[in-house]
Image (cartoon, rainbow, N blue to C red; front, side):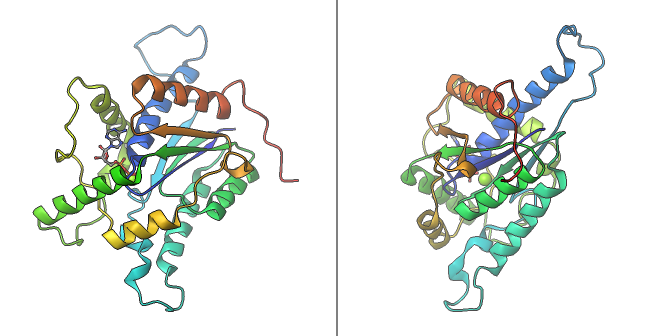
Length: 265
Ligand code: ADP
Ligand code: MG
């Protein structure tokens, strides 16, 4: 059985960047696993992959940032967060549709509600597949800086929020994107702090929405079943550390060290 990997972190903390790196890493591991032992390193016909890999996110489902904005509606409005509930329902549906013993699912998103992570954990358990949490650690200040950069870029380009959420092309092949993300990190020249990233066209959060999400954020707790095993990458973690964390993540959920998943007691 193959697992569900729940990515979590503050808004604009680097979750998608890590999710794409993990996607690229898992693509390689799956290729190796499918080639099997003894299979020559032939560059010939690729064997049928043993597992399918899925990257699910707000972007792939065209979920706007505004669904998280509780201030968008007047207080005391009946279910002010109805749109967020709808968004969660479509994320849940997307996960449920593909989660199986042949599928690895990376769920890239805020995943900031404890009860929501518990629900996902139970869903994985129900199909007897392991789950784990990848926490993306980043200071509040830096995350805020990233969001402000995006807001500034949106204003420069005259964006008024009417821009469609990331194009469908992004959902097609996370592979290429993932490699690009890794290349960028290990590339010789690092982009300077605050320098605008022209390749970054993700939708920003309205400042009030961003603040409120940080306030609402429920940190994962490795002591709870649904937040474990818990893996953490911080912004500063470079290529070597990232690989090490991905290696142990693989070992825990797909490798020899994986514990059998018992049905709900
Ligand atoms: P999120 O998905 O949490 O909103 P992103 O992954 O989109 O965050 O990252 C926001 C911005 O920060 C992007 O421009 C990305 O290139 C940059 N970034 C993210 N993580 C890192 C990192 N570890 N080192 C350097 N830049 C990063
Ligand atoms: Mg993201």
